[in-house]
Length: 328
Ligand code: BYC
Image 1 (spheres, rainbow, N blue to C red):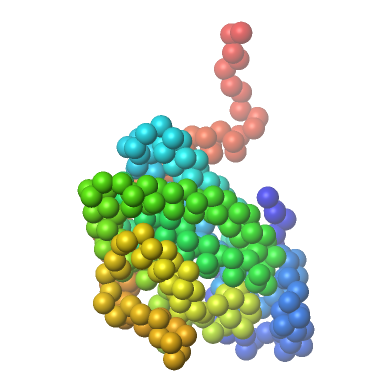
Image 2: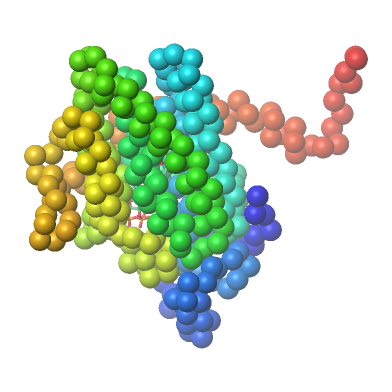
């Protein structure tokens, strides 16, 4: 989609000290003015490294995120739901394509990104390492995980790196359909039988803690927020995004008659922010570092998909190879 990026593998630095101070100042002034940085523009190595890390992780999250919902395509209740879910899952994989293309403009090849995903080197969103036991779990993802993603992506679409922002704009447009679809699924359960309501309440109880983790560690312990906010890659801190999500969706969840499994959750009128039980950051760290309930299964599925598609990639790399001539 974007193409033509520089090749810039393996940026090692975590500092801007080695950068030319004049170029760095001009770069930061452009960001300050709200200009977009494009692939061939000068940028500090750390900006490139941070963008590759974040966009690549985002791409992986879309690919892996297709799996917990994907397993429900054949079991979704009714033909209409099956069709809609199939389209949604296909969109998520398409989002990964857009994001990998955006990351490639910074010089990391798609092959290297996929290799880092399936070897477990790269991270992807914590939330997709939990199982979708019931249809209601799937509805939780379609409504509330997509809602959280939109909060984050709408903000970051106004950020500084052109290719990422353009990919996010397109992704958000599609995600807004997912959100409507997910909300519809949940309203259907909420207005259904006692068992349907119970199914969604149980899903909410299971998914609330990983949902709170989804926005990243609290600002007090976040590693990258400061520099990413300075360079307008992130347009809100993790806590700001979490707070915005709570502002928008807690009332909607309560309106449907469900309860949120956190007795401390309350809007603090003095600060204008939500008070909540501090998420368990030790569990978060375990899950993002490979030790969640489904990490092994998720990566195994990707490894199998990669191996099964190898012959296609090999064939594409040999355009001169002769193929069997069709009989008719
Ligand atoms: N999960 O310094 P911090 C979707 C890591 S898919 C895993 O705050 P940062 C969907 C972080 O990488 C959309 N890891 O990080 C798809 C870092 O580790 P490293 C998902 C996380 O980057 C299919 C460390 O913790 N959205 O919606 O400043 C179906 C320290 O954190 C997470 C995106 O990917 C996490 N949740 O901020 C349905 C949005 N949080 O790299 C739906 C793009 C943190 O130093 N990403 N870590 O080893 C972002 O906006 C930011 O990367 C984050 C984290 C806000 C997530």
